[in-house]
Image (cartoon, rainbow, N blue to C red; front, side):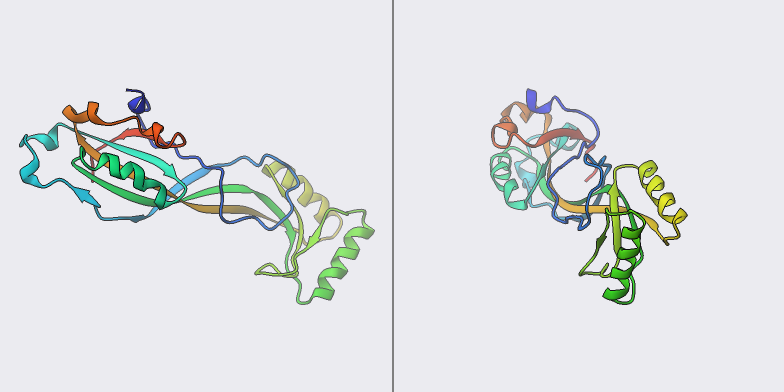
Length: 213
């Protein structure tokens, strides 16, 4: 069946983010490197009673799959409802997806707004117009000089500023957001009972995984 065609490692990518970078992006199309860290594995949310298992060796003739990624936990429920009658056990997971958003070039925060604005005037006097004085949050009074897609462009900008006497710095910016996954184990002889999950949610993928839970 088409739903089981994707076999192998988890392939996670999502474009929707919750946390937004607050600084001006100088280069569009920042390359995204996605890393996933599991932070909230729930207990098994459904498991067949042992007496319901017709084959005592069922645990050794099962296959395990993961379905995702879902944007919210509520998106899992329709799929959970249709799988529950055929699987051996099933659970949901919440993971945090992390990606590099680029390289931020900036001048560290000043003690006062006036001091930060004075640095801005110095930048303007040196024909450096593309800057922003941060007005709030943990980076208040920092002078932002752009978010770059790769290290080379950021380093070029950084060296230009340093050569003109500015105490500029470079920092990797990170974005994080939650994703939700559904794991299930099913007896091999019941695989044909499973509907095509993409009929319920075309945006998720089903991957074969090791049965290690």
